[in-house]
Image 1 (tube, rainbow, N blue to C red):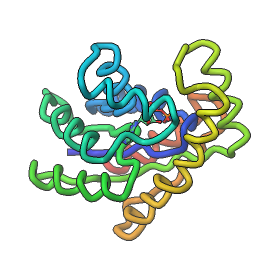
Image 2: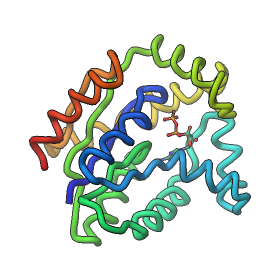
Image 3: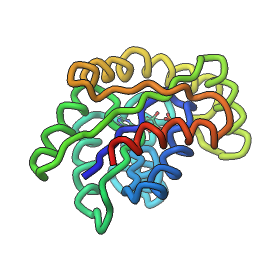
Image 4: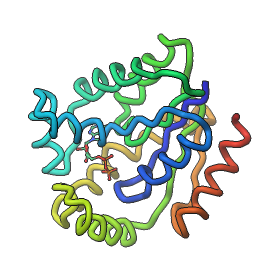
Length: 190
Ligand code: ADP
């Protein structure tokens, strides 16, 4: 199985690129942000809890996310693997993912770190906020999401660097240019 983590700050383009990767390499796309937004719109218990964290720009607690992720993973049908978008976002989540995948006789193949400078992230997210109507795409929440990213999420890369499963990719340029960079890295894996 090819299990790829698409990693990067909020606004780095994970969602956009994940969809393209999923299509090209026949992978199941799991976006924890999308799953959470669905839980919220369905009015589930998890959605009720998640909403407050998301609106403050904070992370939803690890135990809730890990349970949610394991359940979604078990709905996988025919595919060559999974593209994880927005997960893992903490070291605890990274360790849990390892266990979850090992229990299913597979493991993480690679983490791709999409790198974009902070000023560009903020302007992309503000721009997206005008169209998406996402409650967390306003300046105040964007700033706390970026702070949370630096403090809690960025250290996740060390976990994959240690095992040689880390690749950084420049996340600026056109969508197709960025995708071409990602594709050439993934083509070597598959
Ligand atoms: P972005 O990458 O632009 O922040 P996402 O849709 O991935 O957008 O995430 C939106 C919000 O959902 C996050 O700010 C966080 O509150 C919550 N969330 C998503 N994935 C996770 C996760 N793996 N762990 C904890 N919270 C998460």
